[in-house]
Image (cartoon, rainbow, N blue to C red; front, top):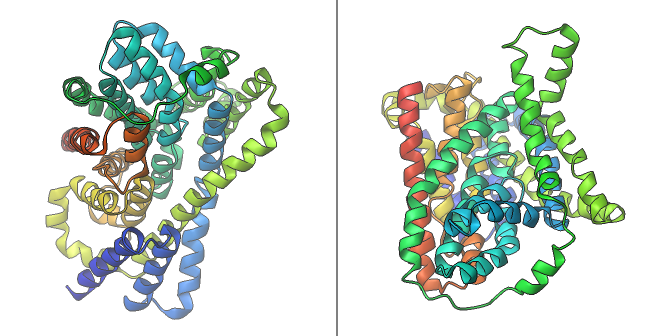
Length: 449
Protein backbone atom coordinates (compact mmCIF):
# COMPACT_ATOMS: atom_id res chain seq x y z
CA UNK A 1 0.00 0.00 0.00
CA UNK A 2 2.88 2.39 0.76
CA UNK A 3 4.31 1.78 -2.71
CA UNK A 4 0.94 2.57 -4.30
CA UNK A 5 0.71 5.78 -2.29
CA UNK A 6 4.22 6.78 -3.36
CA UNK A 7 3.34 6.17 -6.99
CA UNK A 8 0.09 8.15 -6.77
CA UNK A 9 1.84 11.00 -4.97
CA UNK A 10 4.60 11.11 -7.60
CA UNK A 11 2.06 11.31 -10.44
CA UNK A 12 0.11 14.04 -8.65
CA UNK A 13 3.31 16.04 -8.13
CA UNK A 14 4.15 15.61 -11.81
CA UNK A 15 0.72 16.93 -12.85
CA UNK A 16 1.07 19.81 -10.38
CA UNK A 17 4.55 20.65 -11.71
CA UNK A 18 3.28 20.83 -15.29
CA UNK A 19 -0.11 22.47 -14.69
CA UNK A 20 0.52 24.78 -11.73
CA UNK A 21 4.24 25.48 -11.63
CA UNK A 22 4.57 25.57 -15.45
CA UNK A 23 7.60 23.27 -15.49
CA UNK A 24 8.23 21.84 -18.94
CA UNK A 25 6.70 18.35 -19.27
CA UNK A 26 10.06 16.88 -20.33
CA UNK A 27 11.73 17.95 -17.08
CA UNK A 28 8.69 17.11 -14.94
CA UNK A 29 8.43 13.57 -16.31
CA UNK A 30 12.18 12.88 -16.13
CA UNK A 31 12.29 14.20 -12.54
CA UNK A 32 9.33 12.01 -11.59
CA UNK A 33 11.04 8.97 -13.11
CA UNK A 34 14.28 9.64 -11.19
CA UNK A 35 12.50 10.18 -7.88
CA UNK A 36 10.42 7.04 -8.33
CA UNK A 37 13.52 5.02 -9.25
CA UNK A 38 15.30 6.05 -6.05
CA UNK A 39 12.31 5.84 -3.70
CA UNK A 40 11.07 2.51 -5.05
CA UNK A 41 14.50 0.95 -4.57
CA UNK A 42 15.94 0.60 -8.06
CA UNK A 43 19.71 0.02 -7.50
CA UNK A 44 21.58 3.27 -8.09
CA UNK A 45 24.11 1.63 -10.41
CA UNK A 46 21.35 0.43 -12.76
CA UNK A 47 19.33 3.68 -12.93
CA UNK A 48 21.46 5.23 -15.74
CA UNK A 49 21.00 2.09 -17.85
CA UNK A 50 17.24 2.10 -17.21
CA UNK A 51 17.06 5.75 -18.28
CA UNK A 52 19.16 5.10 -21.37
CA UNK A 53 17.06 2.12 -22.48
CA UNK A 54 13.80 3.98 -22.01
CA UNK A 55 15.01 7.12 -23.77
CA UNK A 56 16.64 5.41 -26.74
CA UNK A 57 13.75 3.02 -27.39
CA UNK A 58 11.66 5.87 -28.81
CA UNK A 59 14.36 6.84 -31.32
CA UNK A 60 14.84 3.25 -32.48
CA UNK A 61 11.10 2.72 -32.68
CA UNK A 62 8.61 5.41 -33.57
CA UNK A 63 10.86 8.51 -33.66
CA UNK A 64 11.27 8.68 -37.45
CA UNK A 65 7.53 8.23 -37.97
CA UNK A 66 6.86 11.26 -35.75
CA UNK A 67 9.48 13.33 -37.57
CA UNK A 68 8.33 12.52 -41.10
CA UNK A 69 4.68 12.81 -40.09
CA UNK A 70 5.37 16.31 -38.79
CA UNK A 71 7.24 17.26 -41.97
CA UNK A 72 4.34 16.07 -44.12
CA UNK A 73 1.91 18.09 -42.05
CA UNK A 74 4.03 21.22 -42.38
CA UNK A 75 4.34 20.79 -46.16
CA UNK A 76 0.57 20.35 -46.51
CA UNK A 77 0.10 23.49 -44.45
CA UNK A 78 2.71 25.66 -46.19
CA UNK A 79 1.82 24.67 -49.76
CA UNK A 80 -1.90 25.25 -49.36
CA UNK A 81 -2.59 21.53 -49.83
CA UNK A 82 -4.55 21.38 -46.55
CA UNK A 83 -6.89 24.09 -47.84
CA UNK A 84 -7.08 22.33 -51.22
CA UNK A 85 -8.27 19.17 -49.44
CA UNK A 86 -10.82 21.23 -47.55
CA UNK A 87 -12.07 22.82 -50.76
CA UNK A 88 -12.40 19.37 -52.33
CA UNK A 89 -14.64 18.16 -49.50
CA UNK A 90 -16.62 21.39 -49.59
CA UNK A 91 -17.38 20.94 -53.28
CA UNK A 92 -18.77 17.47 -52.66
CA UNK A 93 -20.97 18.04 -49.60
CA UNK A 94 -20.62 21.71 -48.67
CA UNK A 95 -23.74 23.44 -49.94
CA UNK A 96 -26.23 20.71 -49.03
CA UNK A 97 -24.70 19.72 -45.69
CA UNK A 98 -22.43 22.57 -44.55
CA UNK A 99 -22.05 21.34 -40.97
CA UNK A 100 -21.13 17.85 -42.15
CA UNK A 101 -18.71 19.36 -44.66
CA UNK A 102 -16.85 21.32 -42.00
CA UNK A 103 -16.71 18.31 -39.68
CA UNK A 104 -15.28 16.07 -42.42
CA UNK A 105 -12.87 18.79 -43.54
CA UNK A 106 -11.52 19.08 -40.00
CA UNK A 107 -11.35 15.33 -39.60
CA UNK A 108 -9.28 14.92 -42.78
CA UNK A 109 -7.02 17.95 -42.36
CA UNK A 110 -6.03 17.08 -38.78
CA UNK A 111 -4.67 13.64 -39.72
CA UNK A 112 -1.41 15.21 -40.93
CA UNK A 113 -1.77 18.79 -39.60
CA UNK A 114 -1.96 19.81 -35.92
CA UNK A 115 -5.51 20.72 -34.95
CA UNK A 116 -4.54 24.25 -33.86
CA UNK A 117 -2.96 25.06 -37.22
CA UNK A 118 -5.73 23.25 -39.07
CA UNK A 119 -8.41 25.40 -37.47
CA UNK A 120 -6.63 28.62 -38.38
CA UNK A 121 -6.16 27.40 -41.96
CA UNK A 122 -9.68 26.16 -42.59
CA UNK A 123 -11.93 28.43 -40.50
CA UNK A 124 -12.16 31.07 -43.29
CA UNK A 125 -13.80 28.41 -45.46
CA UNK A 126 -16.30 27.78 -42.67
CA UNK A 127 -17.12 31.46 -42.33
CA UNK A 128 -17.58 31.79 -46.07
CA UNK A 129 -19.78 28.68 -46.15
CA UNK A 130 -21.88 30.03 -43.26
CA UNK A 131 -22.61 33.21 -45.21
CA UNK A 132 -23.38 31.37 -48.45
CA UNK A 133 -25.72 28.85 -46.81
CA UNK A 134 -27.24 31.08 -44.11
CA UNK A 135 -26.11 28.61 -41.41
CA UNK A 136 -25.11 29.76 -37.90
CA UNK A 137 -21.39 30.40 -37.97
CA UNK A 138 -20.96 28.97 -34.47
CA UNK A 139 -22.41 25.62 -35.59
CA UNK A 140 -19.90 25.34 -38.42
CA UNK A 141 -16.98 26.44 -36.23
CA UNK A 142 -17.87 23.88 -33.55
CA UNK A 143 -18.27 21.16 -36.18
CA UNK A 144 -14.85 22.05 -37.58
CA UNK A 145 -13.29 22.04 -34.10
CA UNK A 146 -14.78 18.63 -33.34
CA UNK A 147 -13.60 17.09 -36.61
CA UNK A 148 -10.05 18.36 -36.08
CA UNK A 149 -9.94 17.18 -32.47
CA UNK A 150 -11.22 13.67 -33.22
CA UNK A 151 -8.47 12.72 -35.65
CA UNK A 152 -5.89 14.62 -33.56
CA UNK A 153 -6.22 12.17 -30.64
CA UNK A 154 -7.09 8.95 -32.49
CA UNK A 155 -5.46 8.66 -35.91
CA UNK A 156 -1.73 8.31 -36.70
CA UNK A 157 0.47 9.86 -38.01
CA UNK A 158 -0.67 12.62 -35.65
CA UNK A 159 2.16 12.63 -33.06
CA UNK A 160 0.08 11.73 -29.99
CA UNK A 161 -1.50 8.48 -31.16
CA UNK A 162 1.54 7.43 -33.19
CA UNK A 163 3.76 7.91 -30.13
CA UNK A 164 1.36 5.94 -27.95
CA UNK A 165 1.30 3.13 -30.51
CA UNK A 166 5.10 2.96 -30.49
CA UNK A 167 5.39 3.09 -26.71
CA UNK A 168 2.93 0.21 -26.37
CA UNK A 169 4.70 -2.03 -28.89
CA UNK A 170 2.45 -1.46 -31.89
CA UNK A 171 5.11 -0.20 -34.31
CA UNK A 172 4.35 -2.99 -36.78
CA UNK A 173 0.59 -2.79 -36.25
CA UNK A 174 0.16 0.87 -37.13
CA UNK A 175 -2.35 0.09 -39.87
CA UNK A 176 -4.67 -1.49 -37.31
CA UNK A 177 -4.30 1.56 -35.05
CA UNK A 178 -5.21 3.80 -38.00
CA UNK A 179 -8.20 1.66 -38.97
CA UNK A 180 -9.61 1.46 -35.44
CA UNK A 181 -8.84 5.16 -34.92
CA UNK A 182 -10.87 6.03 -38.02
CA UNK A 183 -13.87 4.09 -36.74
CA UNK A 184 -13.75 5.41 -33.16
CA UNK A 185 -13.16 9.01 -34.24
CA UNK A 186 -16.11 8.96 -36.66
CA UNK A 187 -18.40 7.46 -34.01
CA UNK A 188 -17.35 10.19 -31.56
CA UNK A 189 -18.51 12.81 -34.06
CA UNK A 190 -22.08 11.51 -34.44
CA UNK A 191 -23.63 13.02 -31.28
CA UNK A 192 -21.70 16.30 -31.52
CA UNK A 193 -22.88 16.78 -35.11
CA UNK A 194 -26.38 17.28 -33.75
CA UNK A 195 -25.12 19.07 -30.63
CA UNK A 196 -23.23 21.64 -32.72
CA UNK A 197 -26.32 22.28 -34.83
CA UNK A 198 -28.51 22.80 -31.79
CA UNK A 199 -26.28 24.92 -29.57
CA UNK A 200 -24.84 26.91 -32.48
CA UNK A 201 -28.24 28.54 -32.99
CA UNK A 202 -28.02 29.99 -29.48
CA UNK A 203 -24.58 31.55 -29.89
CA UNK A 204 -23.94 34.92 -31.45
CA UNK A 205 -20.46 34.94 -32.93
CA UNK A 206 -18.19 37.88 -32.32
CA UNK A 207 -14.50 38.64 -31.94
CA UNK A 208 -11.62 38.52 -34.39
CA UNK A 209 -12.30 37.71 -38.03
CA UNK A 210 -9.75 36.08 -40.31
CA UNK A 211 -8.86 37.81 -43.56
CA UNK A 212 -10.83 35.42 -45.72
CA UNK A 213 -10.07 37.24 -48.95
CA UNK A 214 -6.33 36.89 -48.43
CA UNK A 215 -6.70 33.22 -47.55
CA UNK A 216 -8.69 32.48 -50.68
CA UNK A 217 -6.29 34.51 -52.84
CA UNK A 218 -3.32 32.59 -51.47
CA UNK A 219 -4.93 29.27 -52.39
CA UNK A 220 -5.81 30.09 -56.02
CA UNK A 221 -2.55 28.49 -57.13
CA UNK A 222 -2.82 25.66 -54.65
CA UNK A 223 -2.31 22.09 -55.92
CA UNK A 224 -5.23 19.89 -56.87
CA UNK A 225 -7.12 17.96 -54.22
CA UNK A 226 -5.87 14.67 -55.73
CA UNK A 227 -2.18 15.56 -55.34
CA UNK A 228 -2.88 17.03 -51.92
CA UNK A 229 -4.44 13.80 -50.65
CA UNK A 230 -1.57 11.57 -51.84
CA UNK A 231 0.67 12.00 -48.75
CA UNK A 232 -2.22 10.72 -46.62
CA UNK A 233 -3.52 7.95 -48.87
CA UNK A 234 -0.20 6.46 -50.04
CA UNK A 235 1.20 5.34 -46.64
CA UNK A 236 -2.12 3.75 -45.69
CA UNK A 237 -2.19 1.83 -48.98
CA UNK A 238 1.42 0.70 -48.55
CA UNK A 239 0.77 -0.56 -45.02
CA UNK A 240 -2.38 -2.30 -46.23
CA UNK A 241 -0.45 -4.05 -49.01
CA UNK A 242 2.21 -5.04 -46.50
CA UNK A 243 -0.50 -6.72 -44.43
CA UNK A 244 -1.59 -8.77 -47.45
CA UNK A 245 1.69 -10.69 -47.43
CA UNK A 246 0.49 -12.97 -44.64
CA UNK A 247 -2.94 -13.43 -46.23
CA UNK A 248 -2.27 -13.94 -49.95
CA UNK A 249 0.05 -16.40 -51.71
CA UNK A 250 2.56 -14.46 -53.82
CA UNK A 251 6.13 -14.74 -55.17
CA UNK A 252 8.80 -14.40 -52.51
CA UNK A 253 10.38 -11.35 -54.16
CA UNK A 254 7.03 -9.54 -54.23
CA UNK A 255 6.33 -10.44 -50.62
CA UNK A 256 9.73 -9.04 -49.63
CA UNK A 257 9.08 -5.75 -51.45
CA UNK A 258 5.58 -5.31 -50.02
CA UNK A 259 6.78 -6.16 -46.52
CA UNK A 260 9.54 -3.56 -46.84
CA UNK A 261 7.23 -0.85 -48.20
CA UNK A 262 4.57 -1.72 -45.65
CA UNK A 263 6.76 -0.97 -42.65
CA UNK A 264 5.39 2.26 -41.10
CA UNK A 265 8.72 4.09 -41.20
CA UNK A 266 9.22 3.28 -44.91
CA UNK A 267 5.59 4.04 -45.78
CA UNK A 268 5.82 7.45 -44.12
CA UNK A 269 9.08 8.17 -45.98
CA UNK A 270 7.37 7.36 -49.28
CA UNK A 271 4.56 9.69 -48.22
CA UNK A 272 7.16 12.43 -47.81
CA UNK A 273 8.29 11.83 -51.41
CA UNK A 274 4.67 12.44 -52.42
CA UNK A 275 5.06 15.93 -50.92
CA UNK A 276 7.72 16.90 -53.48
CA UNK A 277 5.17 17.58 -56.28
CA UNK A 278 3.35 19.89 -53.87
CA UNK A 279 6.52 21.88 -53.26
CA UNK A 280 7.29 21.93 -56.99
CA UNK A 281 3.77 23.13 -57.84
CA UNK A 282 4.15 26.12 -55.52
CA UNK A 283 7.80 26.63 -56.57
CA UNK A 284 8.87 26.08 -52.98
CA UNK A 285 11.58 23.44 -53.44
CA UNK A 286 14.22 26.00 -52.49
CA UNK A 287 12.29 26.65 -49.28
CA UNK A 288 12.26 22.97 -48.32
CA UNK A 289 15.25 23.44 -46.00
CA UNK A 290 13.36 25.98 -43.92
CA UNK A 291 10.17 23.90 -43.95
CA UNK A 292 12.00 20.79 -42.75
CA UNK A 293 13.87 22.82 -40.14
CA UNK A 294 10.56 24.22 -38.82
CA UNK A 295 9.14 20.70 -38.77
CA UNK A 296 12.09 19.38 -36.75
CA UNK A 297 11.61 22.19 -34.25
CA UNK A 298 7.99 21.14 -33.90
CA UNK A 299 8.69 17.41 -33.74
CA UNK A 300 11.62 17.76 -31.32
CA UNK A 301 9.66 18.61 -28.16
CA UNK A 302 7.12 15.87 -28.93
CA UNK A 303 9.81 13.23 -29.35
CA UNK A 304 11.66 14.30 -26.22
CA UNK A 305 8.47 14.34 -24.11
CA UNK A 306 7.63 10.92 -25.53
CA UNK A 307 11.13 9.68 -24.71
CA UNK A 308 10.82 11.06 -21.17
CA UNK A 309 7.56 9.15 -20.84
CA UNK A 310 9.34 6.02 -22.01
CA UNK A 311 11.93 6.55 -19.26
CA UNK A 312 9.12 6.73 -16.71
CA UNK A 313 7.67 3.51 -18.09
CA UNK A 314 11.05 1.77 -17.84
CA UNK A 315 11.42 2.85 -14.22
CA UNK A 316 7.96 1.51 -13.40
CA UNK A 317 8.86 -1.88 -14.89
CA UNK A 318 12.33 -1.98 -13.26
CA UNK A 319 11.01 -1.07 -9.81
CA UNK A 320 8.65 -4.03 -9.71
CA UNK A 321 5.68 -1.73 -9.31
CA UNK A 322 3.62 -3.86 -11.69
CA UNK A 323 4.12 -6.89 -9.45
CA UNK A 324 2.53 -4.91 -6.64
CA UNK A 325 -0.34 -3.89 -8.88
CA UNK A 326 -1.04 -7.54 -9.64
CA UNK A 327 -2.40 -7.82 -6.10
CA UNK A 328 -5.20 -5.52 -7.25
CA UNK A 329 -5.60 -7.09 -10.68
CA UNK A 330 -9.21 -8.02 -9.99
CA UNK A 331 -10.24 -4.44 -9.29
CA UNK A 332 -8.19 -2.91 -12.10
CA UNK A 333 -9.23 -5.58 -14.61
CA UNK A 334 -12.84 -4.81 -13.80
CA UNK A 335 -12.19 -1.25 -14.92
CA UNK A 336 -10.62 -2.52 -18.15
CA UNK A 337 -10.02 0.24 -20.70
CA UNK A 338 -11.68 2.71 -18.33
CA UNK A 339 -8.46 2.72 -16.28
CA UNK A 340 -6.16 4.30 -18.92
CA UNK A 341 -9.06 6.55 -19.98
CA UNK A 342 -9.33 8.00 -16.48
CA UNK A 343 -5.58 8.57 -16.17
CA UNK A 344 -5.45 10.38 -19.53
CA UNK A 345 -8.58 12.42 -18.70
CA UNK A 346 -7.10 13.57 -15.40
CA UNK A 347 -3.84 14.56 -17.09
CA UNK A 348 -5.67 16.32 -19.92
CA UNK A 349 -7.99 18.28 -17.64
CA UNK A 350 -5.14 19.21 -15.29
CA UNK A 351 -2.50 20.44 -17.74
CA UNK A 352 -4.29 21.02 -21.06
CA UNK A 353 -2.10 19.25 -23.62
CA UNK A 354 -3.65 16.20 -25.30
CA UNK A 355 -0.24 15.05 -26.57
CA UNK A 356 1.30 15.15 -23.08
CA UNK A 357 -1.73 13.30 -21.66
CA UNK A 358 -1.45 10.61 -24.34
CA UNK A 359 2.30 10.04 -24.13
CA UNK A 360 2.43 10.12 -20.33
CA UNK A 361 -0.43 7.64 -19.96
CA UNK A 362 1.06 5.36 -22.62
CA UNK A 363 4.37 5.36 -20.75
CA UNK A 364 2.60 4.27 -17.57
CA UNK A 365 0.86 1.41 -19.37
CA UNK A 366 4.00 0.08 -21.11
CA UNK A 367 4.30 -2.47 -23.91
CA UNK A 368 1.70 -5.17 -24.33
CA UNK A 369 4.39 -7.80 -24.95
CA UNK A 370 6.39 -6.98 -21.80
CA UNK A 371 5.55 -9.35 -18.94
CA UNK A 372 6.57 -6.67 -16.45
CA UNK A 373 4.32 -3.92 -17.82
CA UNK A 374 1.01 -2.64 -16.52
CA UNK A 375 -0.53 -3.71 -19.82
CA UNK A 376 0.41 -7.29 -19.10
CA UNK A 377 -0.81 -7.07 -15.50
CA UNK A 378 -4.23 -5.89 -16.70
CA UNK A 379 -4.51 -8.58 -19.34
CA UNK A 380 -3.96 -6.41 -22.42
CA UNK A 381 -1.55 -8.83 -24.09
CA UNK A 382 -2.57 -8.82 -27.78
CA UNK A 383 -2.16 -6.22 -30.54
CA UNK A 384 -5.94 -5.70 -30.69
CA UNK A 385 -6.19 -5.18 -26.94
CA UNK A 386 -3.27 -2.74 -27.05
CA UNK A 387 -4.91 -0.86 -29.92
CA UNK A 388 -8.10 -0.44 -27.88
CA UNK A 389 -6.01 0.86 -24.98
CA UNK A 390 -4.43 3.43 -27.33
CA UNK A 391 -7.97 4.47 -28.29
CA UNK A 392 -9.03 4.69 -24.63
CA UNK A 393 -6.05 6.94 -23.92
CA UNK A 394 -7.01 9.12 -26.89
CA UNK A 395 -10.58 9.37 -25.57
CA UNK A 396 -9.26 10.49 -22.21
CA UNK A 397 -6.95 13.00 -23.88
CA UNK A 398 -9.96 14.86 -25.33
CA UNK A 399 -11.83 14.98 -22.00
CA UNK A 400 -12.04 17.95 -21.63
CA UNK A 401 -10.74 21.02 -23.45
CA UNK A 402 -11.02 24.20 -21.40
CA UNK A 403 -9.05 27.32 -20.45
CA UNK A 404 -5.67 25.61 -19.95
CA UNK A 405 -5.78 24.14 -23.47
CA UNK A 406 -4.43 26.28 -26.32
CA UNK A 407 -6.88 24.64 -28.72
CA UNK A 408 -9.80 25.97 -26.66
CA UNK A 409 -8.57 29.51 -27.29
CA UNK A 410 -7.94 28.83 -30.98
CA UNK A 411 -11.51 27.57 -31.49
CA UNK A 412 -13.16 30.33 -29.50
CA UNK A 413 -10.87 33.11 -30.71
CA UNK A 414 -10.72 32.35 -34.43
CA UNK A 415 -14.26 30.97 -34.41
CA UNK A 416 -15.65 34.22 -33.03
CA UNK A 417 -17.13 32.48 -29.99
CA UNK A 418 -17.16 34.29 -26.62
CA UNK A 419 -15.29 32.56 -23.80
CA UNK A 420 -18.43 31.95 -21.73
CA UNK A 421 -20.14 30.44 -24.76
CA UNK A 422 -17.01 28.36 -25.38
CA UNK A 423 -17.41 26.62 -22.03
CA UNK A 424 -21.03 25.66 -22.64
CA UNK A 425 -20.41 24.68 -26.23
CA UNK A 426 -16.88 23.51 -27.09
CA UNK A 427 -15.90 22.28 -23.59
CA UNK A 428 -19.19 20.41 -23.23
CA UNK A 429 -18.78 19.07 -26.76
CA UNK A 430 -15.37 17.56 -25.94
CA UNK A 431 -16.92 15.90 -22.88
CA UNK A 432 -19.63 14.36 -25.07
CA UNK A 433 -16.98 13.17 -27.55
CA UNK A 434 -14.88 11.61 -24.78
CA UNK A 435 -17.80 9.79 -23.16
CA UNK A 436 -19.11 8.55 -26.52
CA UNK A 437 -15.66 7.30 -27.47
CA UNK A 438 -14.90 5.45 -24.25
CA UNK A 439 -18.37 3.88 -24.20
CA UNK A 440 -17.74 2.58 -27.74
CA UNK A 441 -14.24 1.37 -26.88
CA UNK A 442 -15.42 -0.35 -23.69
CA UNK A 443 -18.15 -2.14 -25.65
CA UNK A 444 -15.65 -3.20 -28.31
CA UNK A 445 -13.27 -4.48 -25.61
CA UNK A 446 -16.09 -6.44 -23.96
CA UNK A 447 -16.91 -8.16 -27.24
CA UNK A 448 -13.45 -8.58 -28.79
CA UNK A 449 -11.15 -9.20 -25.80
